[in-house]
Length: 425
Image (cartoon, rainbow, N blue to C red; front, top):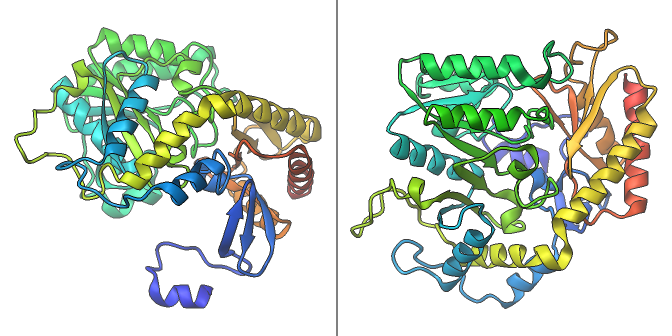
């Protein structure tokens, strides 16, 4: 299969090596079946999407009973588009939420960046080192990683300034004070190309950056700085939102007060769906449609995906999604901490809810162990555990499993991962 894939897919997309990748055949709950008949425990939720589990009853019901497969979302809207917008408006943190639907996280970020540029009147953006917001050109401009940016440097918008995200292990001052000072300096001085900054985009918890949790008070202070300078805050909650971090939105848990929220991944339960949400005072910066929307797409408000989104939101109370994420995440942190407490190459076991990271370091206890997360993820695959590396140097092992993990699956996965971490470090 890998040989066949290499003959038809751009060589940029799928990494192929001995024993990597496996080809998925089916998935259910927290398990994945590959094309060779092997069964794995999925500790990734497939990039965080399957928070409710693979082939969740929520999604199965929609796929079996929903009949409208495509509509005309910006001309003749499907009924389910309206229903999803109303449900999202009820869970948004504003009384007058207005929403732009999209298909992917990158698209939601693009919509958010356009929204705040219109609303603030200032095109410049402040983003954070280690953040990941997507790879379309607008989202790429606020994603600080040369691996992604360098080939397209001539096309990427130059009006983005980057501040350091707080590092609780290495920062000499508590509370992210150095980062906040740098944010203030950049807001005053403007972007590298001279554009005035009107937007801050930030993940409440950095996901791909290594499950990096900000120190207490940092996000509240960041919100204060933005408010003082009339800068709008985008919370990229594509990964962290919709229950994964033990609340509808992780912003609530870390004290961030966003003007715009991007949501996605878990929203569609496996179908492509995302959203950009803001109060009317911000979203109404967009002009009223006169028959031709200036930001839309063919599949905007896709009826099948919208029906899945409605069902996901309806499941929150029924399945107690945030509470289950908090409980299962607590079991994982406790289990990892007890198994790895004596491992000197583990600098931190951290996270919120079901977004967790194990940071691996060199023998000095501070230097990131470059590639260690990648090596352990590859070895874990051979043991039947799906995990992913994270962090700027691939030094973090990231866990973002579904809420349906059983106690037996937790114990087995942690035994395997802890053994690999201890042996590999």
